[in-house]
Length: 302
Image: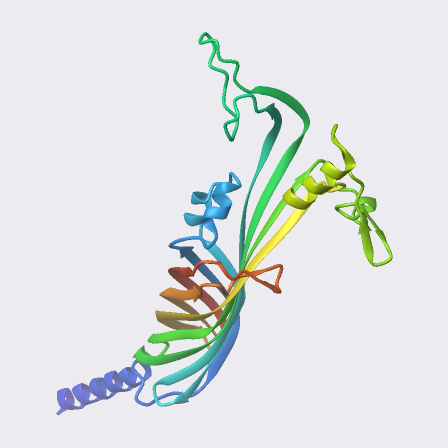
């Protein structure tokens, strides 16, 4: 009889402990916290532009794009959970180039080194005092809702399958400048000087007549003056979709950790790029923003 009572008490105790470990019904609650997301892009949108500028695109492809933002969630009905995410990611690559002037003596586009010993003269190099600094910065802004299906494992441990859906904006900023920028030079017009509603451009004859110089400007376009730097911004807006698997661990009564891994999918359509935020680039190609993502969240809530 004593053995029976002892076994009954142990079984009851074990059953009670199992009720604490394994959830018996859906819980309701929510949380909000600071989120960090890492994304490794399969390809960098605008990579050919960066390559032509002499920048190392591989340095951007292999280095994760780090997002900082916030994320929240709330239990809706049964195992379904609804939330939201907003984050901003950025990275950059830069280089400094020596500048050389050259005389094109062989009428072939681009500089050709002299072929010594063959009698050909080749092009001639002339030194220049300043350097050209080039920097490209990638900015990635994302806002989205999250929908998840929850699989409870233990009382304080859950596994979720979900998707992040929303709108993103990708911006590629390219800065090129020579020498040291000066505040007083920013008000100078890049082609001449402003008089009323007109820009007055002085003709540089370079040994030609004024009529020949004016015709040359009409055919070849104006050449900037008073310019030591230039900033170009290319941007595009896209719909973003990111399926993921996540783990949620409530290690304190009102504090927990979420870790998710997924794959981001977004596309800037053909002709959807814009210059400096408002000028359409109608011949711009389609660009994909895809890559593996890992997201961590320290949240406060239930």
